[in-house]
Image (cartoon, rainbow over all chains, first blue to last red; front, side, top):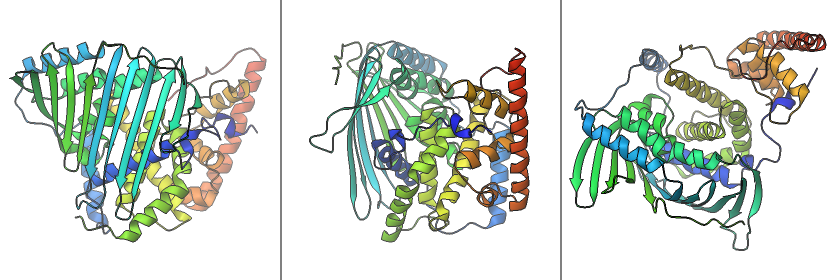
Length: 278
Length: 185
């Protein structure tokens, strides 16, 4: 009999599974943020009620029910937003800054992180700093990831003398396409098409679009913007704000729900971002 | 309802995370369609762990409990993906057939093809045993079946896999590859 380990897609030395590595820290921070954005269960729910609630949810899901947004339809505003997102997605270089703040309902767990991505073609650099404050201590991580010529490198910036180490080869477009999928125009496009109540407001520096969407819709459009997998909480409304510059490019995307605020800023689009080989 | 988080809970979560992160992350990475989906599933598993810390058994049983949560999270995500893709919703557990890792060779391709011929339930039992190294009694707790039933099904699944492999090899020897490499589900 052939060993099933032959088909195991995880390598023994893969740094993603190091419990002290930055992937683990990212998972821990995101898990605490996600948990903080939904109420914590303190006692088992009665089984009967759980089963009924589960059944109702399953039926709604199976029927494709979307508990959605307010009903004011604004096709022109949505078309403008879609156009801005398409224009933004066309840039091959620039900077994207992602920030997040979260806290649990009683404020005992809170945190924030900031990631700045400079990208130029398929090369990029990601600098992340994340802080999670627990009741008894603070966890801070700083990591720089660089992708150059199809090779990814990583540096633990919390260690003063640490240098870059080679993580391995990556598909030439993997980081770039992930960026487009999760933080770029692609996700925003899908979201703009999904939201029903896009409202447009002109200002001195451009246009602001506001809409509400469910967590599930944002999750489907841009997973890092909502950070919650489909489930009962996925029907919770999230306020969405998109600032578009005077020349029609997306400048900022903000999603807000109780305990969780995420912001994506698009800067220097079209400006070359020299990425050095580590 | 929300209450203050006792200090001991934080320490317990930290212990649980440190002990189980690698296993949970691998569990998700082995079954999720993309690395991003795997990471997202691992995030959800530990978010659930934090929210339901009081329901979680102590070490070493917490590992199996987390696998159970991961199994549910991955099944939910797969169902959501199918809904998004407009496919028919099947509420049965979704167990994708593994695709050979790049450069894994001919033997792995054969094994993947043979495995893809098996029913999804058999495949899941074999992978829980082969990848997570779980004993039949542990698998039984995870999938919610009596241990003797799982033992029998596991035995039968191994026989079926051996037969499918033999069929693969004899077909290849005749020069008629029966199944192309890939994920048929």
